Structures are given as C-alpha cells and as structure tokens.
Image (cartoon, rainbow, N blue to C red; front, side, top):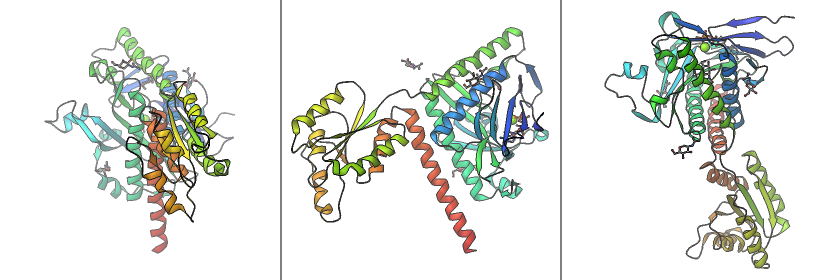
Length: 418
Ligand SMILES: Nc1ncnc2c1ncn2[C@@H]1O[C@H](COP(=O)(O)OP(=O)(O)OP(=O)(O)O)[C@@H](O)[C@H]1O
Ligand SMILES: *[C@@H]1O[C@H](CO)[C@@H](O)[C@H](O)[C@H]1NC(C)=O
Ligand SMILES: *[C@@H]1O[C@H](CO)[C@@H](O)[C@H](O)[C@H]1NC(C)=O
Ligand SMILES: *[C@@H]1O[C@H](CO)[C@@H](O)[C@H](O)[C@H]1NC(C)=O
Ligand SMILES: *[C@@H]1O[C@H](CO)[C@@H](O)[C@H](O)[C@H]1NC(C)=O
Ligand SMILES: [Mg+2]
C-alpha cells in the first residue's frame, strides 16, 4: 500500500505511516534551494548526505536528552519521526554576527560575538520573505497546534530550548575545530503527546560552520548562496563541502576523551550508597568501578589500588565513601593528583560530628565533599564534561529539562488555581 503524502515542501516530503500511527516518514529530496527557491539546482547525492547529517545531529541531541521528533533512520534518504503540527516559526540563534543580521543591524561588524547568544525569530511566510517577528507578535498570533495554544510558557520553552540546542551543537563542533556561527531550527507539537519538540531537520542548510573559526573556509550552504554562476565545477565544490561536513558529523557522536569514576568504600555496608553513585555515573555514560578498602585498617592496599588506577593512564575521579571518621578520602587526596570527592554516608545520629572528618583538611589537600551520592556523580561528570563533550551535552540537556519541567509544573498549578 502506498502511504498518504501529508505534506511536501522544497526539500522534503512527509508521508503518513499506516502501520505506526503518530509517526511519519520524512523523505529528503535531491534538490538544493537558496533565497526561497529562486535558485534551484539538482544535486545528486544531496539527500543521502542530508540524511546522514540530520540523523547524526538528532542522535547527538537525543542521546544528550533533548526532546526531538526524530525516532530512527528508515533508509539512506529518509527517517521516521513523530508526527507533529509544525509551529510556523524559524528560531535563529547566533554566536557570531554575519549574514542578514549585518544588514538588519547596520554598524555591527561581521565577527561581533554574542555572549549570551542572540535569539531571533522569523515567521515562516514565503510570500512575505519570512518577516522577523517579536515575541509579542508571536503571542498575538495566538497559534493553536495539535490542540496546544502557543502562549508565553510555550514561547519561553522554545526560546530556552533553542539556546540549549545551540550550545550542545557548538560544543560538539568545537571538537572538530569548527565554530558554529549560527543556526536556525523549528519546533512542532507532537500530535500524540502535545509536547513541544525539536522537529523538521538540522542539516547544513540549518547552520553556518567556520572551520577553525575562519569564514573563508566555511563549509555550509552559504558557499552555494555565494556562487556567482552555477557551473558543474562549482556544484562539485558545494558537494565536497557538504561531504566534508557529513564525514565529520559522525565524529560528533564520539567522545573525544575517556574517563572513569572509581568509588572506594570503607566497608560493604556502604554498598547501597555506592550503587547510587554508580547508577548516576552510568546515566552520564561514565564507567564506574566499586572497590572496598579502608585507609585506617589497610592503608597499603588503599595505596596499591590507587597506584593501579593511576598506572593505566585513564583519567580518573576517585570517590571516597567512608562512614564515621573518613580517613579514606583525605589519604587518597594527599597521595594522588587526581580529583577526590568525599561522599560520606551520613547517619542521623553522629552525622553532624562525622562530617568534619571530610571537611577539615590538613593543608595541601583539595578534596571536595558532597553528601548526595547522585550529586557526587554529577560533580564527577562536570569534571569530565570539561574535556568530554558527550558528557557535557548530557549535563546541559538535563539543565534544560529541569527548567522546562519546573515551568510546566507551575503552569499546571496556575491552571488549577484559576
Ligand atoms: N515531524 C514532522 N511532522 C510533520 N511535518 C513535518 C515534520 N517535519 C517536517 N515537517 C514539515 O514538512 C514540510 C516539508 O518540509 P520542507 O522543509 O521541504 O518544506 P519547505 O519547502 O522548506 O517549507 P518550509 O518553509 O515550511 O520549511 C514542512 O512544512 C515541514 O514543516
Ligand atoms: C544515512 O545516515 C545514516 C547515519 O549516519 C547512515 O548509516 C547511512 O549510511 C546514511 N545513508 C547514506 C547513503 O549516507
Ligand atoms: C528569548 O529570551 C531572551 C532572554 O530571556 C530574550 O531576551 C529574547 O527576547 C527572547 N527572544 C525571543 C525571540 O523570544
Ligand atoms: C584543531 O586545531 C589544533 C590546533 O590548530 C590542532 O592541533 C588539532 O589537531 C585540530 N584538531 C582537529 C580535530 O582538527
Ligand atoms: C548540508 O546541507 C546541504 C543542503 O541541504 C545538503 O545538501 C547536504 O547534504 C548537507 N550536507 C551535509 C554534508 O550534511
Ligand atoms: Mg523547510
């Protein structure tokens, strides 16, 4: 049976999936457009390259924990996504001023750096060349999509999500020495869950990338827009640039640095506490090893275990779990250059006194103390996140998701109160 076509645009077709209600097939077309399709050339293989870019980028975001419409790859040129009603807004996020921003803001030089990121939005209206909109214009448009009214809360969620998505992609591209200059994305309302999700696609139509921060080496669609004349050679160059991106986009999924957490516990009676640390580490994708050793009763073994992990070159964060008097963390901290986190299993009876054995250190020791096992794992993740973008992206997405759930909880409470 041939599935019904729900929608067709300049670059893709959307098909209903009869067997899987709530999902659609997003099929790319072998066509590249610029300036709202005034220029239109066929480029063989473009769809396949675009497929790869989109699927890698969505996978990166999904694994980080960003809510997206993407489900899975279907073929070389198509993927399966949640069926959305699209919010007709292009969200643009900029780190460096270039392109249309310079025309709209005369006096600002190319290369001006936005910190915080610059947000803009454009109403998707081909007939009027996608006019820039203010937040107020979006609110007054009173869109309702898949039964969800787009009000202040929804606008804030999209604005915040765009920033988080940009920062995640920026961090990932930085591992390839590539500057993410700006980006445009679209959101949809999932017709089943009524959630706002990142939808449509992210490919190099969607961003500007400057290798080594150098505009002259840009590898994005601007090269195509800038072509004075579309010759076969010129199209080959555009295609080579696209291939350059699609080769590297796969690398974005790979962590650039390894690392592990080694939890040392003074006694197996602290196992439950340590398992919580391990579980939280695993959620960040960080391997976590549990060992039993007492710095009071077997200091030779403690130091031998330390040497074992120092000896194989893998960056390690030690977490010391010792009740009553914590000798373990301080002894480790005094004898290794790796970070040590004290995570004592505090008990109600003596906790207020015991905690001082983790806090008051001799000079020269830099161990930190974190009481919650999940928080200790999170702190270890933040340390690895400095050099491992995959871990950093999970931390960043988790921050966004916490922010969004607070916002939604408040909105729900307000609705009930009224
Ligand atoms: N997951 C999805 N569910 C439903 N529709 C989608 C989904 N992803 C993308 N679409 C829509 O499919 C249509 C075709 O995409 P395409 O990008 O080719 O359109 P376009 O010509 O660029 O027009 P537009 O200016 O709306 O992007 C668009 O309207 C797009 O919003
Ligand atoms: C589409 O993307 C996926 C994910 O990278 C890849 O496995 C597949 O080979 C791609 N297809 C083509 C033709 O590039
Ligand atoms: C997004 O949020 C920022 C910070 O709150 C705000 O300054 C900006 O106007 C918002 N942008 C849009 C396009 O809504
Ligand atoms: C990035 O640039 C630095 C310095 O120029 C270089 O040493 C490094 O190999 C580059 N990395 C990649 C992934 O290209
Ligand atoms: C980048 O975007 C262009 C334009 O859609 C597309 O043809 C190409 O496949 C994408 N390229 C890569 C390499 O991702
Ligand atoms: Mg489009």
